[in-house]
Length: 190
Image (tube, rainbow, N blue to C red; front, side, top):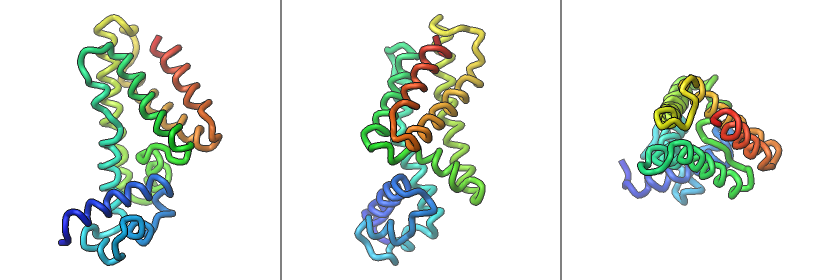
């Protein structure tokens, strides 16, 4: 195996390339060029493009800041809103050219690669579980209707977010993200 620093450079480049170009449009040569390493170095650290995509998904999950959802001392729905505001800021700051890597891989690769599909599903399940926990906490605090099905609501919120990101990229506009905030926080979680 090669040096850990080269693996790190390749893994970071893969994450950047997959986010910018998607899975199918990203070649190993794109990754190694972005990392500034010879193409053969890729195979010292990853057995395939798919393996590097799984590593990219893992690294991407760390950027979602799920810790914002569990931070103590703040009202649950406020933390939930700030979490999505943080994620929306990334989309706006990058000119609507990258969405959620898990959502992108789910749309682009899930039908063709079971291992990536499964990793995407696990990521979404973990994220929805965090959202659900925030909703339960809001119910317990009396800030949210106790009759709301928190499991279904968490899935709906996550699905609405992913759809808003796709629509924002297609429209090159913040309007879908603004609609997400209006409906989710102004209607559903009111």
